[in-house]
Length: 196
Image (tube, rainbow, N blue to C red; front, side, top):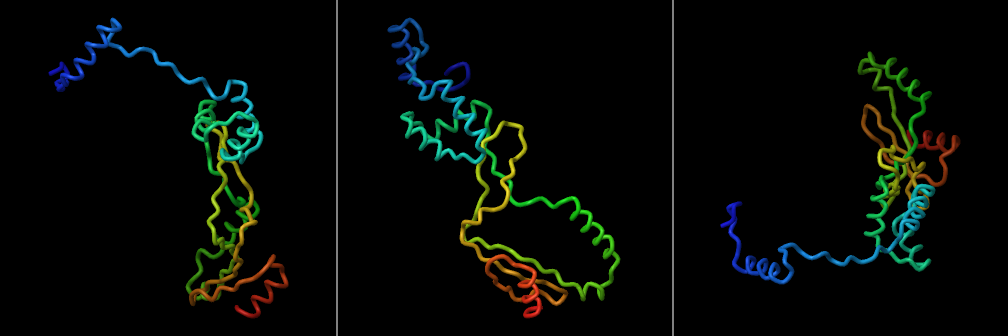
């Protein structure tokens, strides 16, 4: 039994003793490490590229390294980026509500907060929406630790999407209306005439 109250096998003791007899020390000998794939200058160039071009993917950088004759694995690349203080963040999508619209909504909410049920029976809420058959996540952007999550603007519309309009009222929801292209004022009026 050792002083830590753990059982140590005879084989382990024999190996330590044999190592001590051969090297004069029970410690492991220094190991020879592989040389680094990228030198400091190459690493700094890659980091600058990721910072200057938000949205650069690990996959595209690995492909670039292979083209220039400096192949590197994804795992190594991620490790090198992290060692330089970069962290991956998923980009934010969509637009923030403007201050003007926030004020309008707040004003409307204050106006209707004392409405009785009869008032709400005459209200209809409608909206348009895009449905993507394939889920679109935000791009992974590598940025300095501590920086806010970068904004990536509108969703990528190169995927096939389904555009629809619908409304809800006191009496429940109504059928969803599918439309094509951009919903302009005259198209919106046609939908209201035909379905509201």
